[in-house]
Length: 199
Image (cartoon, rainbow, N blue to C red):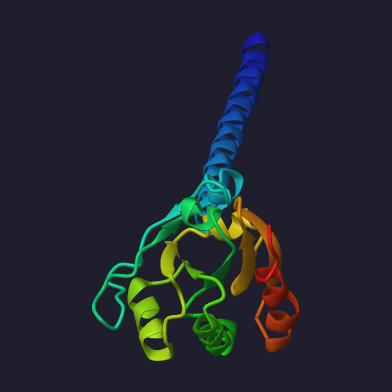
């Protein structure tokens, strides 16, 4: 009788052990899947960049777009916070893949021709080849063009997409923010008045 009880207890313990092993295996698999999913989201959604943005308007440096030159062959430089600190300027976030950037670009070329303030272009998450083709085909209104490859500067100024345009006052500090496509009304009613201010 005792042997029978021991056999039953042994079978029960064996089942419990198998159940525990199974639960442990499922738990580990779930942890693995969860960690893998978190890794994918971290990379694809650029969560690290959103949480740990090293840029502010007062402290950043954007490298030049590789191979971008002016018609005379002179390389187009990137820019940094120091370039925006001393006088009013316009900062435009754009990309070759952005339809609204195509639509507003002629307005930026016209604005640059007025020579009221330097225009700096931040090329966001773009391929250098496409950025070069875009500006060669449509004209380059920018004093300098920096590659904002991870969108750090864009997010530092609160822009969630492109295009976005800012009037930067000495400091540097944001004086006017336009999220979305520029139009003539925005230029006449917001940008030009800000550029003619003193102080």
